[in-house]
Every structure is written in structure tokens, then in C-alpha cells.
Length: 399
Image (cartoon, rainbow, N blue to C red; front, side):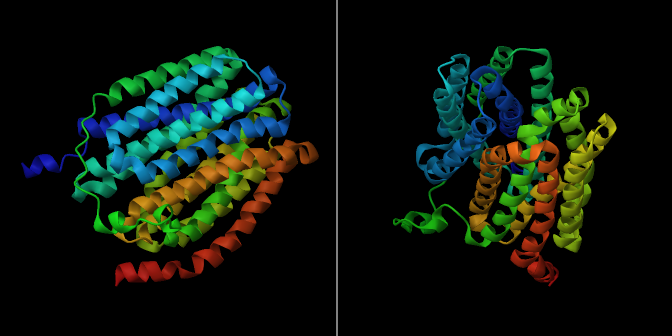
């Protein structure tokens, strides 16, 4: 019946949202603990520790690029199960101490498995949502990611202070097994044939992997993700240096609350006033949040900076994704979304490694000052690449 087709919270939609949430909890839990794990257990240098953190995201990027091309040939549910099985398998390798090279390889393969699984869940969700409620459904689905980005680091920092790394890995492995088990319960309808345009593209072309219209905003996404990578990878070290370890446990929780409170308003503002109305204030909030973080010697200031960074970066990233989709014709929206995520993964992946070289020269406090200046400079780049044309998108929509 037609009314059944309009149902949003189907069993399969809930399963995919839970899997996405758990994958992102593990993703960010490991992001905030791996640098200190590499230093403590493997005596890694700062740049090596940054690479241990960042290579995971490079793996995710490789997984996304490959999966987008083959998911419909192999079958979406099958790809999801393969990704999650590989995820659990590589999680078990964290328990083996065989040197930094093996750890790096393990992180890379683990990242690839995350890229495969998360691309599959995103594709399946877009497929199973009713046409009339796609926007609303994807909005709810992306909230599972927002919660994962907050709860993951919160659990990671708490466990790194009160537990062992073995317990952290065991928890991640058990969560991965839960994802694998519930993925088997999902029913994914077959894809009704490949569109002619897709079938005819035999030769290699960049546009098969990336959406050209989304590339300008993807460049901005790389820059803002680079700024955020400095927080994800090194907030633990910074908090120890400033004796703010207890407060740092709640940094990402405050960050998430700021996103959850502001995102409903910023989404509506973007639709009615245009992206610039959200992007410019959020750039300033993010940059000032980084500056405030650099000066923090008390828990209150640290958490206030977390709220500013959440409202700033959290809304910059979601608005950038919306810009990428709005600029793109409907039949290439999936590609625009993956272009955005590839840029996000790229910034978060390369950031810790490059910043690992800068920290010995500047220290953590000055690193955050430098990143604040970098975000202020990004405002000008945003204006050149997108900001000056944003009113045309709004006029076209109103027209």
C-alpha cells in the first residue's frame, strides 16, 4: 500500500542508523586514543603518532573511492557485510604488538573497512527512504553520525584515563560484532538496473569518482577538517600539558550538545537566507574557539571553547555537505555526497601527520593559535570559491 511506502522509521532504516552510529563511535574513539597508544606502547615520535591516527582516515578514503564504483555490481548488503567482517577481523590485530609498521598497516586496512561499511550504509539508506521523505530521513540519519562524533571521543578519553588499551580494543571489537550481526537482519531490495549514463561510461574519468560541481566546496571542507584534526588528535596531549585532563573528558560532549542545539536553526537559515548566512558566522566561531582553546588554563574556558568549536565546525561541515548536494543535479547527488566525504576524510587524515611535524616547533598552545589564523584565512578562500556566488543559488531557488 502507498501509505506503507511513506514510512520513515522502518526496521532497515533503524538498523542502518545504528550501524552508522556504532561505526562512528569506534572511528572517533580510536581517533582520540591512537596517538597516545602509539607513543606509550610503541615509543612513536609525534609525527609517527599523527600518522598512526591519520592513516586510518586515508584508508577510509580508499575504501570510499573503491566502494562507490563497485557497490551496485556486488550488491549493497553483500558489500556492507564484507566491510563489517573485515572491520572485526582487523580490530583483532590491535592486540598483537608487532612493531609500528604492522600497526600502521593494521590502521590502514581498518580504515578501508570503515570506508566500505559506511559507504554501504549511506547508499542503502538513500535507497530505502521513501522519495517524499528523503531529505528528512537523511537529516535523521546524519544525526546518528553527529552523536557518534561526540560519544566516541568522550568514551575514548574516559577509557584512556581509567582503563587499559586492551579494554578499549575489546569494546570496539564487540561493537563491531554487534554491527555485523544486526546487518544480517536487514533486508535490502535489489537495485533496479544501472542507469544508461552509468553503464555507458567505460573509460576512466575523474567525474566517475568525484562530482566537479562539488569540488570548490570540497576544497573548503579539506581546510576546515584540517583545523579540526588538530583538536581530535592532540587534545589529549594538550589537556595533560595544561593539567585539564578531567575537563577534557567532557570536551566532545559539550561540542556535541552545541551541534545538536544549533543545527536545527542553521539548517533552516541556510534554506531561507542562503549558505553565506551560516558559513561566515560559523567560520568566525570556529576560529575564535581555537583561539580560546589555546589560552585555556581552566576547565570552564576549555569547555567554552568546545561549545564554540561545536557550533562553528559542526555547522560548517554540515552546511558544506548541503552546499555540495544543492549545487548538483539529482542523479549525481550520491557522488556529490561522496566527494564531500572524501574531502572531509582527506583533511582529517593528512592533518594529524602534518601537524605532528609542527608541534615540536610550536607546542600545542601556539598550534591552536596557528590553526585559528588558518581558519580566518579560509574565510577569504571560501568567498573566492563559493561565497560570492551563493546568492545566485538562493535566487534560482526563489525564482
